[in-house]
Image 1 (spheres, rainbow, N blue to C red):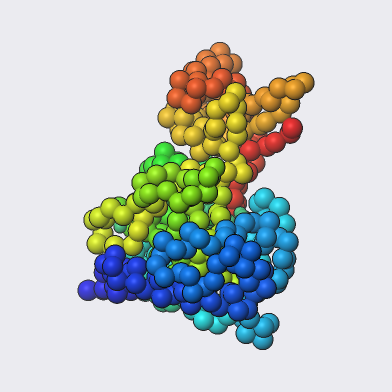
Image 2: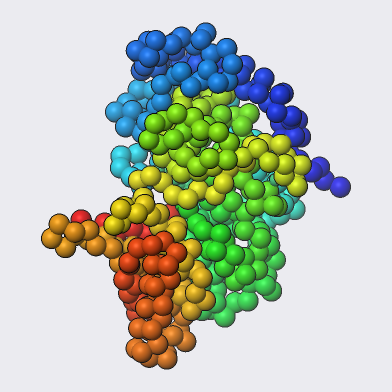
Length: 432
Ligand code: ADP
Ligand code: ZN
């Protein structure tokens, strides 16, 4: 029988033990960046704090935040705490929201990242006899190599298919006996759609699990992927600034456990920036605990989330985070109401006639911001003619009004007109 946990000691450590471990690592990291990175020395001095002022975990709140612009201003290596001779890998973010963010690793950083990925994949049924098709983009993006390393550590057979060439992905699933696939959830939908068009019944293949991450996706979309793909859909979360994927992972209960022995999470009120209690929604903030090349202190992710310390059926005591609702960058303010694309997605997915393919278009009419939701629908609706298309659009629109409280015209586009995602899906088109 194979072991239940990859790293039982940390995955099941009690809270007291974990907090003591975190404090020790935190103190070490604060001192490390203070000594090695002029930016942190200045920032701490300006805030009037010294690493030695951190005597308990709560003291971290006295330390200044690090924001994305600081990483950009210090691009590429201004925040690097080690000489280049100690750096063994450099990744960079996909730059969804601007200039790339660099992620240098020492050999030890890379080793920790690999362990975090193996821990997550192990919790998600990946074993040495699995065939893992890695359809994340390989390259600067942390997704591809992060999953590769974790799967390699477990020792399964890896098919490094990369993102794209969707027809070939399906042939590989069939011919190589793929049991597990890793990609973005939106790319998985592209694969499922293509398989359906090719007449390939995925339930007849060996594919059983999906390991999805890198973008927000609603629970409704997850359910759709599970049904149509005949798999259990697991999730990973992470960002280049911290290590890439491997920050947190779901267990079989869909709870997202944070690798809190490597990254210390806080939730802060986005307005006051004060830490909020467990169970309260706010901005997710992380501090690296063990990295050496480019640790970040109180890094504001801009991801909106809630932390919880509830007991999980899987037996892991690692703190959990809720599914990410969205990034503050993606939040739209429409008629005074804060709306995330994922909330619109949730409403769209209530309608079985609507395809999980949509985009939100923001435009300006005079001084007024205008929003429309564009989506595709199932072929039956197209076949039934314009009247049913119009009726459905109206129904979806009034449901959005009912649930979110804003008036959003819904436009049903012709089939195949929304670009299929192979990586992170672009949900918002801002023409303002
Ligand atoms: P970029 O900022 O260029 O997209 P990254 O690849 O580092 O670069 O992306 C990290 C971001 O991706 C996270 O901050 C978060 O917004 C998003 N993300 C990653 N995984 C998930 C997930 N499982 N659910 C929701 N959002 C995610
Ligand atoms: Zn769990």
